[in-house]
Image (cartoon, rainbow, N blue to C red):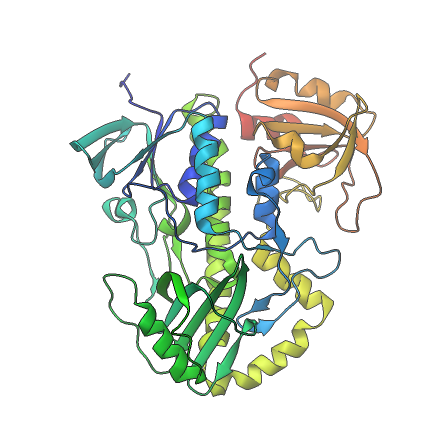
Length: 492
């Protein structure tokens, strides 16, 4: 047997890499994270969380670490207004949390769990022997070699791991460029959904704490080949050309640019090497989906890879990572491409925007788009069965445990273990799960109150994966088969 330095090497300490590192530690795996930057990012970047990411953080008890959270007052799909808080508001996103804050919270959590995060280490390549990988990195003391059974590239859209691993990354190059600045000392009326002018598009969004984000795109200007971010003067000049307003006296905090390139890796796993987050998919950062989908990639992969490297199950479980998340990434590219057409198109697209604005006012259309953007409506193929809850996330339900304690269902997932939730009187499921006791917790409970419409569990028992998705429903499939598929063979 080879001697490994760690169980998993993760390239990149952004939100996806840190979330993955923490999930691996919760699964009992050793992990080394290599990050080329010497210190955590101070850039605001992705601002806030979609509804599903909020649930994911709640599943791990992380929400209190972010402090008071503010729900977004509105939403848009490619600049066409849409109310993502439709109905009971569960689809509403949170705004005002910078990516720097997210990285700080996830980094602190990963460190508490024992993840080995090494900053100032730039991954330069690796060798995949078929039995494991040897990762090469340039660090403060020169080249470092780290041997591990698996490597995961969470190193962004220009991923070294993806390129060195020979992953195909088809798609389209950027056709437009958007200039962005987060600034202080600027008073502008909010333009939450973007505003169209003859020369281009403008967006202005208050971020809280006296900060405002401005975004501008000019029609007919091809993307520049840049080696660094634009200057704030460039942003202010473009804003003036499009709007006629002078914002040059504002104080810039962060300035960047991005485009509408859309690419996705054809496979998320090649043997011992896997991709997650922007390393697997790049797109227009519309509706704040980029960071959120990346975090959800990491949560899907973390418990599976952790189970494999700790010997609890075989590699077949890893195949479900690509099978489940690649379609999610493909849907992400489709909806961001559609938003790019609406967001960046000229006067010729205005009739389409006006028609869609009417359609999006309907509750059914708003709920469909909210589910698409938030990730709440994802459904995985988890095996045989036709129950409507199978393969979907378990709703966040108020429960009363057998002990009389009142809890939310998300709290049962804090340890990142499987959960067999028994809501009926049949003791059979609990007995069947005894052999998986080291990896699956059995909870007997009843609903604490009448749940909202669409958030019910119409079953006597459900098996929940560590990522919160339902893997089995009573009366609809074989419980022991589902346990084996997700948690390996019984240990007792």
